[in-house]
Image (cartoon, rainbow, N blue to C red; front, top):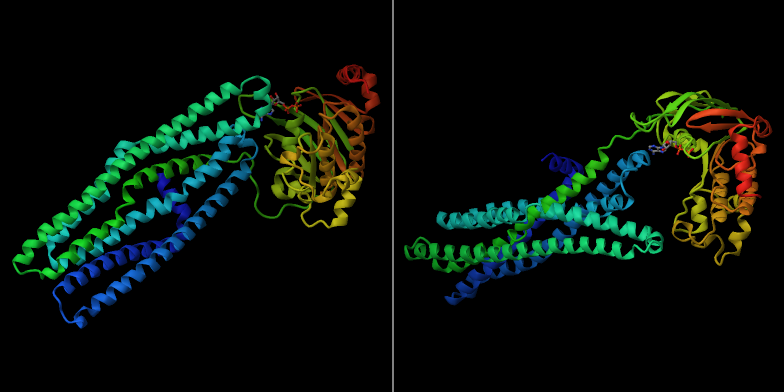
Length: 577
Ligand code: ADP
């Protein structure tokens, strides 16, 4: 019930278009009833051979309802879909807005296929919430009231018979269907989600699956899920068939009962016989409003299951609280870290444990250390993907938490090991960093990142598509694009997170050159486990298990003969440059 109310609140802003569509839905069925009733009256009346003038009203009525029915049907479809798509776009925007602050800290536990399924399928399922859950009962109620009043005017018993069969088809059959299909809707939503997740995993992990000969097993799993999904669909189709047979039976029984009740009224002279066909056929066509009802509970269950899954994600509190209002202007671009401690969960060890250092504006500081030392954690904290608990990080004398996330990320450019390129053109991928950049500006950044010539050599230059995640480019080229992006963004603080990891030594040196160009005049924090090009750093911190174990310049650290020296020797032994 809570989910239902939340869903209603969510779509409530569009109540006007939904109300309009509901009224039009009622008018469509009402026109249908009118058409059948006037036609029946016309035929019955004509059989008595009255002067044509007496039939005029009925003839006009048939024409009117015939045309109005088509027009109302069109308008009802139009506005109902308009309302549905408005509601859908509202839900999509709402979900995305709720999702964004959860990235990445809170969404790590969700598999990406699972999230895709929620965004696509669950939101899609809600498409039916208005069309198939809310509207049909309202339309049916309005039709029932109208036709009940109409029949009651000729004879209360007729109206009561209609009421009985109307309620049987509108309430009893749907309840029966619900009892039979209980849980099927929820199971379908869940199975579909599992199937989507499995498919996305299969596509993303294709190489590994093939390499480890797991294709067969993967196929089995997909097959099992799809056959479960098909079974569920089959079960639903069976129930649907049964219910439509029942509804057909009840509608015809209703027609017969009204006829049987009306005939004595004619015999007793309480009802003119010429109305007989009109009443029976009018009542019959009012059942059009009942036809969608048996599936209402089914669709309601599916919609609620989908909504619950969406709410489950949006109800997660973001780990980072974004402050509304203007952020302070940093007075300088000094980065200061004091007594910084952080862990990912209260029962986990400290990932960063008591860090103290200052990175003066324009200087270059490197943080090195073995895997698991806490380097990426520091990046996460600088970008406020997570918030620190103890100690402080300040940018130009202001605590990081005082900045809004958007402003903070404007001051910092990041180049990481995994540069994400969208499946778009080179130009569009560059423009991400500065949407309004001019052509010359783009080219200049690309030149400085030493990628311009390569881009020029592509078949369509800057308008070449880079493929999914940029797969048409080599690792080095992707990193250069990332550097060009950072140059375009032109932020004062630069964060390089393993920017050259994964490149071969020759490419690494070349990319390093572009990076040095990028560092000029910027406060730079380099995070790396590879000790390349560190002689140009103003200070190097060696991190181990979240603590600084050595600090100094490249040469000093080598002379100290500690962990840095060990890492240096190991690296040069393994990958002699
Ligand atoms: P590095 O980047 O130096 O390899 P990390 O900062 O990734 O090290 O990791 C430091 C510690 O924090 C490790 O013990 C790691 O297991 C833990 N850690 C890293 N990321 C997460 C996370 N998202 N959730 C929980 N623990 C994490």
